[in-house]
Every structure is written in C-alpha cells, then in structure tokens.
Amino acid sequence: MTNTNITNFRKNIYKLLESAVEYNETINVSTKKGNAVIMSEEDYNNLIETLYISSIPNLKEDITEGLKEDIKECIDEKEVKW
Image 1 (cartoon, one colour):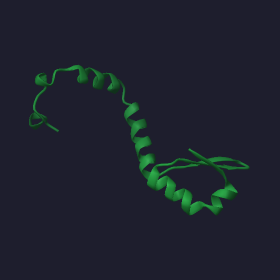
Image 2 (cartoon, rainbow, N blue to C red):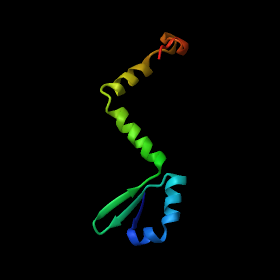
Image 3 (cartoon, one colour):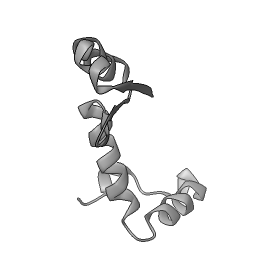
C-alpha cells in the first residue's frame, strides 16, 4: 500500500492512478478530515465478490467438504443442470 497526503496525491495523481490500475497498488490518501483509499476497479470488484461469497452461510464448509471428495465419485459436468 502506498501512503500519501492530499498535496502529493494532487501532484502525482496520474502516476498514482496508473499504479493502482496497472499494478493493483492500493493508495491511501490522508487529508485533514480523514483518509481515502484508492484501488483499481478490478480489486474493488474482487473485494465485493469476496464479501458476497463470504456472506453465504455454510459455503466455505461445503467447498471444503467437496474438495475432500474423490473426483471419481463426482458426476460429469455435462450432467449438471443449471
């Protein structure tokens, strides 16, 4: 994470935004009234998806149990009805 103040952020906005987009660098910008976090849209979407998946009860346990199953015991993906 890169930490900067608002003055330096203004001076380097293009470079900092490019760093967030190209290298998924999170930028913490401090101001007199508080801090703001800048991240790429990709990172933001991933974070929201992770929060959503984490909110589904028992999903983690279901996935963990599924990973323990022998692949030979699983049905073929063509048989799955979506």
